Image (cartoon, rainbow, N blue to C red; front, side):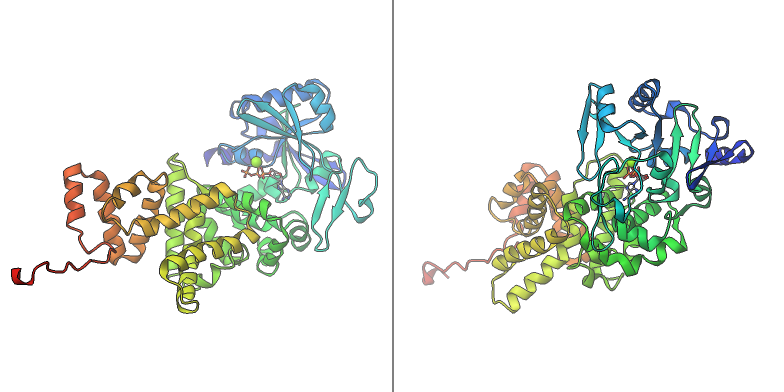
Length: 456
Ligand code: ATP
Ligand code: MG
């Protein structure tokens, strides 16, 4: 926090520069805290190469925001006035990607620096016309394609939030702040640039981004920016499900999933993404709500201690009670036995969910595994317990069961506890644990008929 104060303390050395129809405040090097030591070496290489080749080169977006806050950026995004082809001409390790907007990826082993050309304005008259490229809008005002190159001030106008429209200039290490981003950081506020309704209609994902940044930075969302979200949340149904998968992963794998989930509830965003689940969440003290929160807390703790997490786990958790509810329907309305009802329900819930969020196959397989293990772990007789231990997803299934146990208590908690002990036990103790289960583990006890009645 010290750092932040230092950044904002010497506003007198800032000067206003007018650029196009946006005013950028230029914050000179001595008036901010961003040091080249905090910038990744690869990002610096890219910036310097562009600059020495005569192009403008800036860091932009989240990395500038995070550096000003003294946080470690997730990635470094570069913008330039060089076109993708010109960028490609400068870097051997360059790949051009993207249909919606052509971007250059400069590849350094596993590290990739994304370089974008300044984006220009889009308007109805640009549609199908001949600026540098094309832009097109859908019926809801959504931007479908936007490949119009422009100047830095046009580019700034296209950014989403004021805190994301700051540019770090490699030429003189100054920061161009186009929309009062520095003040917004000081006020700890997420505010959209421009008219919120227009901006959300252009790209409904901005509603999710508002929530994500507010949760991550512990900022509030400005009045103006939050007001329209509940009303426009249904526009998320126009977003391609594959893009929503990416966004939802960012929401829940940011290390701030609990805060994010609460904000999504507050702004009615969650139900748009998980329509089968929202009806179960009316009561925040109910087990369904508490279970999701608990799993997300678990996810946050794992991420914040550097442990691995898989999207399969939180999807399995979010959808779990929707599956259970469907099972009851299949049993009571369809007359199915539990086994069949369960299999049908897993399918029903996933099929409906992927209409909204395109969960890739490798994760939906993981989700099913975790669900099926909930049934398997209840059956321990014979060799079953040993077989479950060998299941590749055993650990995830067991962790899931533990949290269910904590929420529901009773037999479920006992079962989870049993598994905790069974894993730790020596083989002799394991045998005892199994034999003392008898008849208690979901197996129907077979009555042995006395062979010889005279014996009894
Ligand atoms: P982080 O990388 O920490 O999640 P970020 O702000 O860098 O946050 P990115 O998704 O990496 O987010 O996007 C980089 C920048 O691109 C943003 O800061 C913003 O300026 C711009 N941007 C990204 N998505 C949008 C969008 N949907 N609408 C407008 N601008 C966007
Ligand atoms: Mg980023």
